[in-house]
Length: 464
Image 1 (cartoon, rainbow, N blue to C red):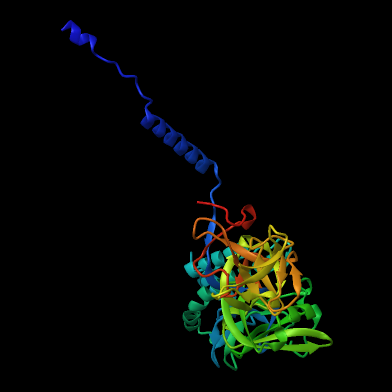
Image 2 (cartoon, rainbow, N blue to C red):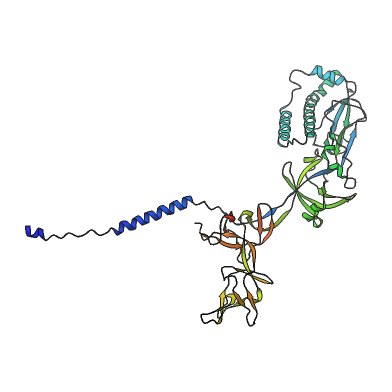
């Protein structure tokens, strides 16, 4: 047994190759994770179709068929119709209490709460205040006076309506049938209780000064409870057809190509309503104005003289990409006549000429990565050959040295995980987006994913 133990041979331990390989893999993974976490995330954009709306803002004067009516009586006035509503022929517009007896009787007849504001009147006041808050402009103090007039009109109208509801029973109980004068409409239309002196303005009499809001005065007729004979009491807008006049400069006309337009889509900035009307340019005393004829929404804006609008001019349709995604890249510009096909295939390229080891000039066909062709030049990727390469014109002794460059605009497509330059042909633009032509060779396509900020990357850069 002792002899057998003496024959036991000990083997040297071999390096643990598997452990070393495993350690290397762990280090690689850790390095990859650290690099991935420290690398900024790539923001991409999916190309889609679209167009740009390059809207120009203007302030227009509303021109309507308006007729102002004056009172034939003096006394306390009470209105029956709400402003901005339609009335028919022989509808009662207002009454005038010439003696003051009606007011005395009504004040005696009124009981607690009878003259309080209705829920509808309170709602109107809230809407008026909210609209003023939303549209408030600290540079236009005149709107404060408009708010005061609107609130006064709403309160007076609500109180008059409450009182008038009891008028018939009062007349019957007192036996006084001729307490007041009743004024009725002589035609149909939309009733308005304000005047501003613009009621007779037309596209033939408009002046540049009329668009100056600092000179504009709007007089509310309902803010007073007394009327004097001969003074205006209301006006009627008698037609649904109306038009807007906007001041135009020669730059406005040229920039928006307005001379060729016969119709115009506009958006009212007050409530974002969009409509279309016939368009023409009129010239008065050397000043140009755009005339937009409308047959809708007259009643909606019957109490407004100045309306802020946008001209909706739709641009070209194409592929829509952000401006930040565009980048410029240099390409060789080589005369088109040097382009040829090589050997037995149909690949396009150029014949280059260089010296071999024996010092002899040897022609060689080089397949070219051509991005664009026009009537004069081929635009060739600079990786095709080095600057200074001599190109030979096929079947000719003409030579051309590559080196002349020109920049083309494009984007970096990252569908494959690295940046690939793709051309764009811009047909419309604004500050945020380009609209580019579809179907351009070597160009961007719909649903391509492109780098959103191209200034941070270069071509053939791995990003995933």
